[in-house]
Length: 311
Length: 289
Image 1 (cartoon, helix red, strand yellow):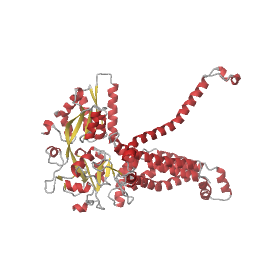
Image 2 (cartoon, helix red, strand yellow):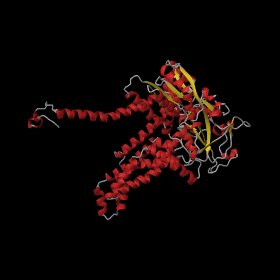
Image 3 (cartoon, chains in turn cyan, orange):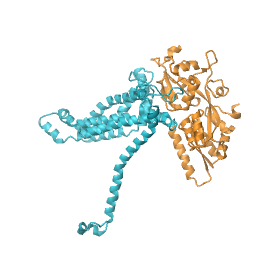
Image 4 (cartoon, helix red, strand yellow):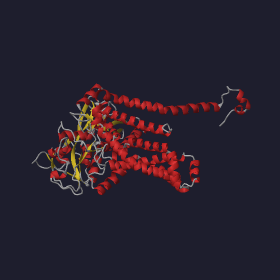
């Protein structure tokens, strides 16, 4: 960078008012970085205000809170009896995310422990790249896999009427959430200082003993946070769940039943509803519900990472 | 499909904006997913004949097109259902008087898996399968044994509740005051319904006739018990013998004028109607008789 010669002279310290190019660059970068940092806050508040405003009409006038949380009948476009029961949608999202976590937690924690504690050299590098590649697969591609590969496979294997449901979307979502959980869990394990491991090894512990007795307890907060962020990912995922869950308003009684997720309902219906109608703002109310749940999960994960719950 | 349409309309827009010839006129055309393939084909053929007029087509559903017409952002809205009284009221409030044009007819076909032995169904029988409170949940109740469907359960494939096809099937089959049974698989497009039925032996679904493929079977329908069973086709939709056929509509803002009028007149001409017939819908006008 071209600067004035005086900028490098020792007298600069006494001449506080001298503003050269570097000084301006510094100020501009400071402002830009501040705008970047503040924008996150502006956006989150803006989004919350927007969805609250759009959902307000429904919450204030039409919404029957008891019906919303306890009725499984979601029929917003019924001619004579429009009903806004979100129970089946909430149960749908929860059951798919629950199964996804059953799939993802063992896979991702296992992968993280292997990468961080056992793998060495090239193996570890290749594995890390592979896990990151897995995270780069677009969700619509996962949805296609659910629709065209898992669906016939589940029908054949279990002789069920339709292969789109909790099992299908739970497996897909588990595989989608696993890479991000692996990466965060691995970071948590890496953050455990090496002298913990060295001390344990000096006492004669095997590598698994070191991992189980020393590293895992020390990294516990980070691991919990990894799982919680995976849950948040599961709640928010839309496209893959829309395609693999069967998109059916239904209180499931088995893992083969089709269900419908909150996110998928918004995605499928919002495009064709008239602005300002009850249906439109009811969909935004679902959005508020999702926003609040995901916000609480992420906040909890953040607090856990910061170790506030550390004893 | 929706994405393809979007890409197409964006590229049309770019062509329209980038062209040096400023005298080009643009017709904005948006709406029904049922009509989107035809609308796109019309736009392409029309551009070949009249390079000065560009028609930008996008889908999104009847409701989307009608909303856009109400808000004044499109010249022509495609719809597979009529505007609701409330929508017309909203449009008038915005100073838009919607004018309806019938541009073709579509038979709504009932699809089952190709191995399904069903020979025909009545509208009342369909209502028992799809309607709230209906008691038909198993194929054996209809006296059928469907190969590959060990569970015997009828998998109902339907559409998302904001689509025009969903609303039309409800009024034509279930009746105005009956709702759908909860728990159907609500697909997000006409083609998705056919795709799911193709891969699911237990399934039954409804979608436009134009989306039929050799991999699925269409069920001949009877208006009532004892009436003749009619297969959906262009001719049975036209002569009214097939019980669930609906007009396909285009709405304009007021009586069409200028470029919009020229475009609509061309659509209703034999040349335009030959294109809709080729896509699997029933034409109107002299071709239809």
